[in-house]
Image 1 (cartoon, rainbow, N blue to C red):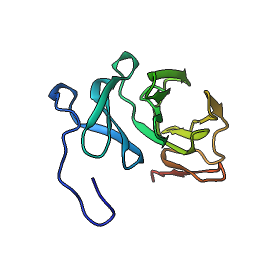
Image 2: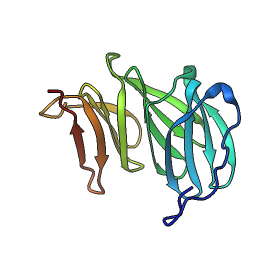
Image 3: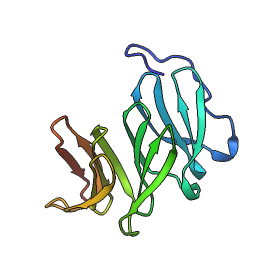
Length: 162
């Protein structure tokens, strides 16, 4: 854990080797982080220890994760799936928008506004209850990242292959 000045000691959030490396990770606060491993195993981390383990439906592994508030995280998956995570109910698979490319980036400015972008330029918006398709950005290409601001706007960056 990085405290703004230096890195602290490594902490094992999960020790089950069958789930491999953990990625992605997102923290709403210093005492609420969610990490996701291969095979869909995820864990809440409070800054010192694991507080609970959860499985993503179907054992799927999200590519990207954003936790805008304690107890709430949103994720995008390999085949166009979208997910929500709530500490009270665990993971819930939401809508799937096509299956050609996965969501590579998700960003939330609050618990009621998130944008997910796929590598093909497809975008989805979360407005507090469900994900819906959004228009593609005017310049489509391989998406690298998306970031939302406090005004519920999103910036998407693209990678161009020459």
